[in-house]
Image 1 (cartoon, rainbow, N blue to C red):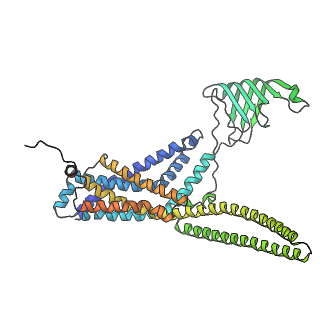
Image 2 (cartoon, rainbow, N blue to C red):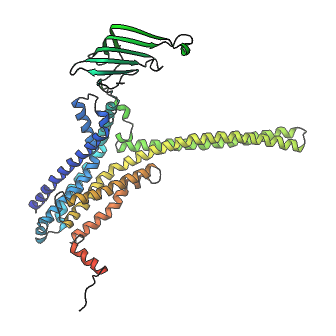
Image 3 (cartoon, one colour):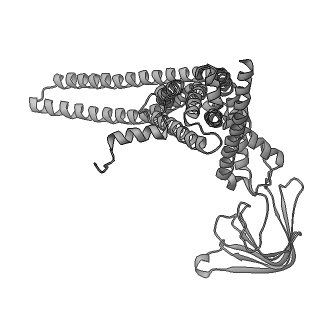
Length: 473
């Protein structure tokens, strides 16, 4: 029995690792396609790119691991069924539940590892990844003037060169537009040729221009809008220096991102969520007290107005009119104040509630990853034993179908929870609740050798409902 268990484990671990790294590679490629415009042309070092891809791949483990378990379990038992190894095991009196037992134990260990990874490793990976991605996105493009293209990578200036000598810094037919005064194209420098260099720290750009002109619209004289004074000066050689450049990548302090809910473990999420709920409750109590104080203030004003007007010797009509005007004025002022207070607090409460929901969703996500690994195993293993097809054909089709269902339900539930239409707990566990009965059903059918996907069995069922018409003799 031990040799059989080792054989099953070896047959399962290979496809598991293969499918896991394939899924991880596909997700990383999707990340590159998404951010390719922000990575290209910035002169990033190879070490920075490797570090960014490593942290990105770590954040994709919660998606790649359940898919790998589903596909590998389906492939393993599909191969067993296709090569009649499953039949040989059953013929010796070993039921399917015992054949699945070593992989069930392994799946439990994988689920425990998934929980540990989600609670301890993933927050750190998210912190490293998002802080590094922020630094990469903030990094300026490397200085690279191309022929016939206007370059505006320097604030306040636009540079154009009609021709650039290959593998040198020599440029010809240069135009430099100066917009630093924020008054439009009033300053222009042209030159027949030039040479451009960067300082060693890449913070200053030096242009040496030859045989050119400086053009400027004069805007500091009287009636310049009518006279349009213009100035032109020729030079044989001129040096222009552009300072304040920073083409290097500055690393941001990671502590600035640590308060994000994706960078927290269970204990931190619980403490922050409880704190946010307490603050929300306190704000709600203060709002109620503020509204009650407004009503007390109105009643006090009305009582004072009534006592003042009662002490005078006016007619009843004058008494009623003065009292009504005073009461209406007080009510309008207080109503406007209450309305403004409610509108402000409504936005504040909405923002605080969304923050609480995000923290609660992330708290439940720590558990749903590990449970999803178990549920998808109990879908893939019995389904592979039923369809009896291995390889990357039919198992991939069924795996994609079930994983898409799992992912769509998860995303939909999370969106409903963020919108306040569903509780965070139900939203995060909805996909597991939907697929758990499917796993139980498939496991039951596989252990009882039910011909669930047998073509001949389905043909017999269809013939009962749609009998073929034959010629009677």
